[in-house]
Amino acid sequence: MFRFEHPEYLYLLLLLPLLLVIFVLYMRSKKKALKSFGDMKLLKILMPDVALKKQHVKFWILFICAGIFPLILAGPQFGSKLESVKKQGIEVMVCLDVSNSMLSNDISPTRLDKAKQTLSRVVDNLENDKIGLIVFAGDAFIQLPITSDYLSAKMFLSSINPSMVPTQGTAIGSAINLALRSFSPNENAEKTIILITDGENHEDDAIGAATAAAKKNIKVNVLGIGSVQGGPIPTRDGYLKDPQGNMVLTKLNETMCRDIAVAGGGMYARTDNTNNALKALQSELNKMNKSEVESKVYSSYDEKYFVPAWIVLFFLLIEFFMLDRKNRILSKIKLFS
Image (cartoon, rainbow, N blue to C red):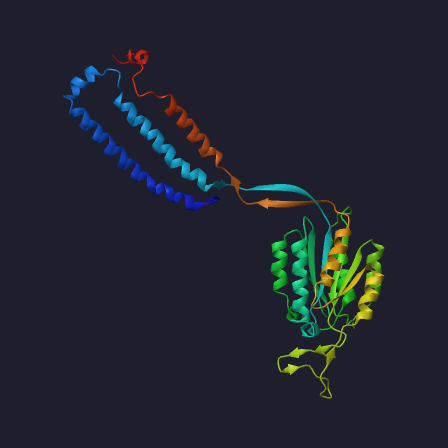
């Protein structure tokens, strides 16, 4: 595949007809001026060393260079290549709670939106690291495999909503176990899990899963999201109510979140309307040792500007050494006389 990186420079090619018109007018003016001195045949005898044809040749050389120069500026690119790049970084698997309780707005704008904003800031602070994303409610699913493509990570993050997981609940243990299986096989890379949840675990053994992660030297850092006072859960018809008609309040289970963090050997911070939790998490990530991580970067296009550049240089050298006058030695050679 062929393309130009900066195609706007190709508009300079529209100046070529103007250059041609200027040259034609200049040559006509020069010829008219010579005719004013006398007959052209006589003038050629009086000026035997003047090579009028060389002026045309020199112009066409410069004209070709002027035509190629915009192509150089436009940056021609052709072909493709696969580069292997070695980077120093860590691996991070994020487990994000998307149960219906995360729609509560006891944290502005909602628990889920606040979690997504926090994760977006985490991705912005990553450098040469790898990140993966798991969403969970009653079950856990990989939303984004471990990658260094931060643009894709933010794109997937923005599209997350509770409808992505059909089974409601809060299976924190399943999410942690899935995260453990989702890291790369690179044994040198230091790994960590970031769990963002309101801590309302009803499904499995979250403490046991966090303990298993710690045994593999993988810390589980927990961000508890929500308020201890709690808030209602929005539904299409208003707010969620129990069978007796009472409004259901969802509260941050801070005890559960702390216990998971302790079992996983990580840190715990409550995510509220400040940036304290983000700062605490970032400080924890900065403490991790960055090791060599090899990742492959696919480059779609290869620069080819040097090809027309060499052509321009070749023609300019010819034009530079080409004199306006005839070469006395070469003019005496008559190959076909």
